[in-house]
Image 1 (cartoon, helix red, strand yellow):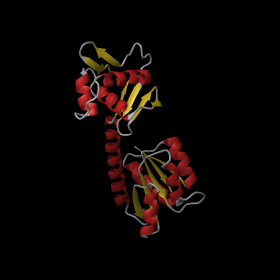
Image 2: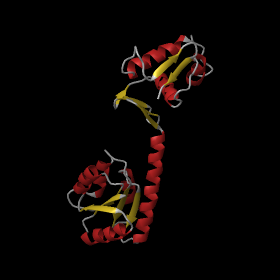
Image 3: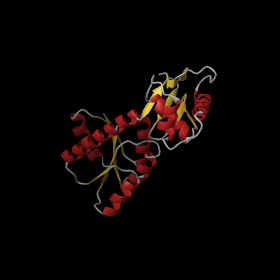
Image 4: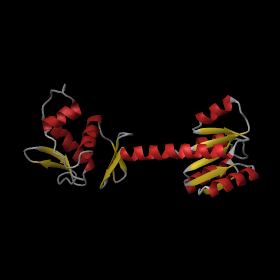
Length: 226
């Protein structure tokens, strides 16, 4: 795991580096907020330890900038203990806060806890994001992608493709799709399903007239071919 440590106190950075490298972490470091932003973009660390009071760009501003492109866990370090400073850090996107001077064992414990939480979050996100060929469905953000390009779908179109892609190979009758996507209260023409399938093919298939993903089993219904 790669950890970025950014603080203008050189001795503190060396101490943190020594202890973390002894635990098997890869450590990269910087001395001001601008370096923090640049290194976070270039090195893509698994966790960032960021001092609040630094030259050029302070830690709070750096944290805010990093949050524009990354959800990496961030621990803020500060010599101040006022609750307002901590609140400001959390508002900028920090995940945890340690007041100097701190026990290195406590810092290590915070790091382990945040990395565990981050790993769980990442695994959950992967479970909610399914890719098949050129198509990707993100259930968390409710977005569909074709060749990494976000495709605009209506709410029902998304519900329909989400159901199909989560059940590859399973054939759904029109009645079953009406029940599961529109709900039992829906009493429209069954051709509503056909219309939505046609629209999905037009938006997501490479060649809608010869679909590769959203297929028909004649006389039965529709299914997704993984």
